[in-house]
Length: 114
View (tube, rainbow, N blue to C red):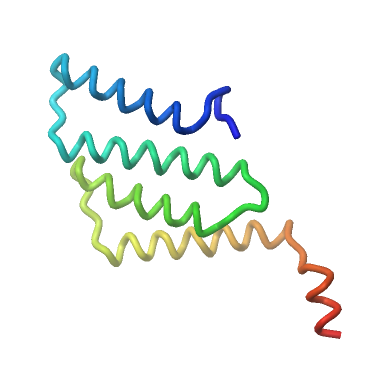
């Protein structure tokens, strides 16, 4: 599984190295912000990987979005646990509604019900 021709871990290493380089040259990020950048980059790569993987796993996307929403607090967007939970729940419902159009029950399950 590659994104832009690179493994997701390689992209994450490059992002971390880039942030470290920028901070060493004076980018005013504190320790929490640097950690949040890593979490955000990891969440985005997780979402991209999950979207490209079949079968699509909704729980991996919703977990990554939850991490992403929690990490943005380091940059001033403070969301309560209820807000994060509600956003993740709404995302789950939307993804399940979209995916349901393209998914059918396993033939074996249909036979068991009959």
